[in-house]
Each structure stands twice: as structure tokens, then as C-alpha cells.
Image 1 (tube, rainbow, N blue to C red):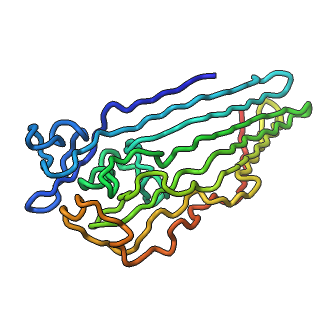
Image 2: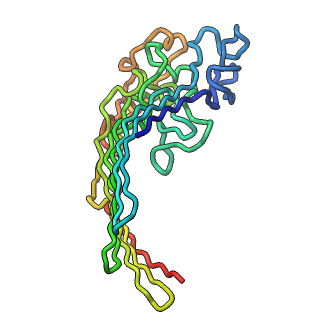
Image 3: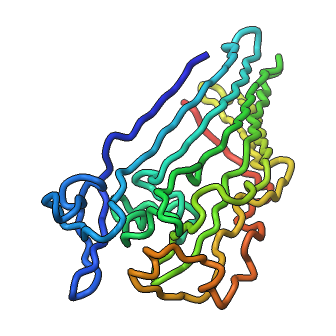
Length: 280
């Protein structure tokens, strides 16, 4: 059994500042240096909500039981109970998508601080809640057995909580605004997945020919890995004063997104791979 605690001290991100020529982005430590109020020696306008520091807190308790290979078999089981909260997911943004799916991997240029109001709710509360990869429960089991005639079969199975969903509004050309904070909606479905493996060696004189088979998602589980978070398809623009006055996002949106809270990003179907390996 082990306990894990990971605490983020500082982050390095691009920070959006509204200046006469438009939005200018500075690379800085959120909450420090240039992101402090102008009256304190920074560049942050004194009339706005303060730039919050980056926060990512991870707690976990992990239980594991493993049997090493002996008497032709091995196996193990683990369970992790965890919490991942804050306002910054790290160098890879779990709030954004790229061409490969969820998880933007452009370090230090995510949208967490692209505009002054993004780290806050519509009620001027600093955002702090479950991050996009928070899975409180995670079970994993594995095992393999080698038969006397040489065939080895094995499996790895996982079961884990879905990820949190937050109402996300596009506003003023900016995605990533969470008017009510994080984790406001239900999670995506609980997921179970299992893979199988088989391997059979054949002696050919002084060499060995090994045949193998990998089967991914053997149960053909097509569960959704996300719920669609975007609330609107239009792009309402509010003035700085209107945002500071505590608005209601439902009153400014005109075009709702019909995909909102629908399941998407489904697991890949069952697939198999055959392998041939020569050893000499």
C-alpha cells in the first residue's frame, strides 16, 4: 500500500492581457511577476479580478497485490482511490482537443489564462474543481499462465470511473470558460476494458519461431469516454464591465449546441494483431 501526494508549485503559461492594440500574450508564472496588479509592479489591470496562481493537487491511495512468475503463472491486482483538483491540468491540457482526440499537447500555451476571466466563474469565484483526467476509482488486474506444451496466455483488465463534465461556454472568441466552475454535470460512463495475449514458441533447430496474438478490447466495449461539454454554438461578447457585474450565461446565449452532454469519443472496437518473431 502507498500514499501519493503531488503538489504543483508554479506553472509556466502564456497569459493574455488586453492592451490598446488587442490581446497580447506574455509568458509568465500565473499569480507572480507580470501577472500581479499594476499597483504592485505587474501588468495586470487593477480593476480586474486578480490573476490566480496555478493549482493542481493530486492525492491517491494505492493498494496492490502481485505474484511473480513461478509454477508457470503470475498475476496481480491493484486499486487506486484518488482525487485530482485545481485549475491547471499541466503541460498537456485535458480540457482541449487536438487532431488525435482529447488532450492538447502544446506545452505552456494552453488556454487556461488566455483571457483574464477564464480562471473564474461568472460569479467571480476562482475555478477549483475536478480536472479533466480525474478518475476517483481505478481497478486493474493482470495474469498469465504457461501450459506444459509451451503456450502462454495472459490478460490485462481495467475498470475505472468516468471523467467529470463541466458546462463550457464559448464567449468573446474564447473557449474554456466554465461559468459555474468544474465538475458541474455528471461524469462519463464507468468503463471496463480487457485485452488478451497469447504466445507460442516453436523450436527450429538453433532458432526459435514465436507466434503471438494480441486482442484489444476483447469485450468490444463501445463506451463513451466523454460527454460533450460545449453549451453554445454562438459567440456572445460582453464588455469588461458586464463580466465584472456577475452575469448569467443562460441569458446571453442564443444558439444552444444540440450535442451538449451527449456521449462521444467512444472506445475503439475489438481489434486483433498477429505477430511472428524469430530468435537466434
